[in-house]
Length: 319
Image (cartoon, rainbow, N blue to C red; front, side, top):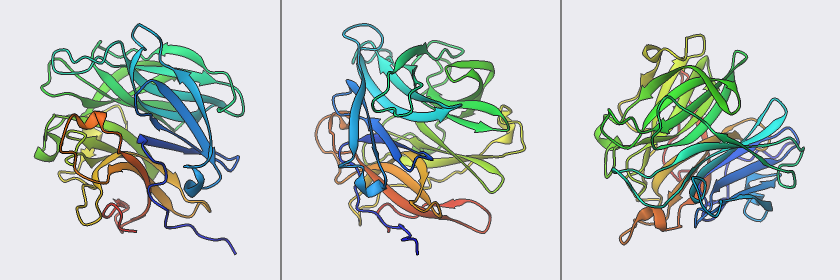
């Protein structure tokens, strides 16, 4: 009889914000996330989520000594697309803020080896969007033989730090066609400290494309929202997308988990349950910039679906 894994020894990985997991057909969970110091991209793998903290790991890419890919390496994601590995991440040329935002742009690495921990990674360059501005947190998904890219970016004409956008891709490192605005920070819970929509993650279930995202500053106010569209709809038509007015996952003082967000999705070990992967802090940051406090740990939590086909994430640490 299969041992159904529905609870985890949290946190599953220490000091990794923006946790991303890809469950491969080779039986491994591949994990990456923001490494404190923000100067490298690390990939690790294990046969179970509980084994990731002690799992195999490799530093597959380092920040350049100078230039636009030399500073603040944030939120890498690892994907397998058409038989090749890709890592999407954001990098800046400085750690300084200008005109209210950091200076990040989005980049792609490619590896055509079977094992991404030991394979050779090549730089495919910057993902160019409609305008040059602060941009980060790119993610990809496939639907109907099309490859889509969802990301966060500052529009100079819109107040705030970042909005969410979607575009079709010509290949895994090039956008094509129109770029559609999906969401801007409009509710109070998206605007605490900073006006932020970022960290999109996609899960396709029950005839819908769901996008979770994170809002507000990266302290205890950080929380998750939800967008959705029908899978049969034109995903590049903004009117086909809907947005919940309330957050779907937020701090739990009772469980000592603060600022949960920047999530990804995976399945549990036997493939029977959906699992939310997210970072959270064990306490409220009271001194300094929260970005410089490395206590955002990666957590795993099984979640369910309601009768209307929507995800029910519950409360951080509720399992």
